[in-house]
Image (tube, rainbow, N blue to C red; front, top):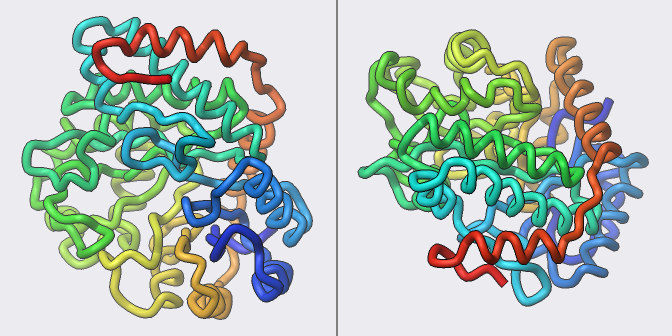
Amino acid sequence: MKNPIIFGCQGLALTAYERSFFREFPPLGFILFKRNCSTKTQVISLVNSLRDAVGEKVPILIDQEGGRVQRLSPPIWNIYPPAEVFGFIFNADKGKARQLIKTNYQIIASELFELGINVNCAPVIDLIEKRGHPVIGDRALSSDPKTVGALGKAVVEGLESGGVSGVIKHIPGHGRAEVDSHESLPTIDCCLDDLLSREFSPFIQLRLAAAAMTGHLLFTKLDPTHPVTFSNKIINDVIRNLIKFEGILLSDDLSMNALSGSIGDRYINALKAGCDVGLHCNGNVQEMELVAKACPGTNNVAKSRIEGFLKKVADVSDSRETFDIDELKVSLSEGLKGFFNFS
């Protein structure tokens, strides 16, 4: 069993030190960002180097949502519509919207699979909220929980049919946050009944997903002291027992400014609260060393969920369907006319 952390790396290729560090302290997987992606050949080489360093086919993650959040960018890769576009289409034609968003993510999955990337940190199933910070904005599918649930399921289906596993985020719901959790800790002061009818609803609908990512959010009426990522109460009482999510739970990036304490303490606090795996994205070697020193190991419950996730990723990859990608692109382009210029 690898260590329960997912790391980023610094650049387009591993440094000698990174290669040595990852061999000494092998993480569960890796996550790529725009700084790591230049050309297809280069990304494939980097992915192979990451896997060589840890000795097996570990999960390689990326945030390839479409819209503002695309780590793989034109002109090498396609540009995809923001999620909100499919919510607009859903309002007019539910069946068409579900098919289009599934096709969209089948095409995304084909690009990722070609590179050796087998996990996409999507869909965002937070809600669009009038007062919500634009860090979510059009990354969300809709303001309606049922719409988000239906389209979120279609995203996961599209990714999985293309051989790539999805990660739902940001559990239990980032939409009402009025500040960007990359910069500071959002406070959401809503009662449980209100949260159940809105924020939590899409996550309940997708509770069978293989993986979810926490939001660094302070729900004052649920736990006035700890943000979700550090809250044993919210993770156990809400995410596990109320939402009934049974898959692997990843923290959002531990280096985000919503969290306080040293990077090592953040990692320990996330695992103690009930996150199965920490996520550290910035590729800072000094911080990764501190995480390695703090690593407490994996308890049996988390180990079981991690093993289930790794099996799911492998099974999804092995059962990948074969598509005519050009045909899918034409279908998507035709379906998006009037909403988004996909080409």
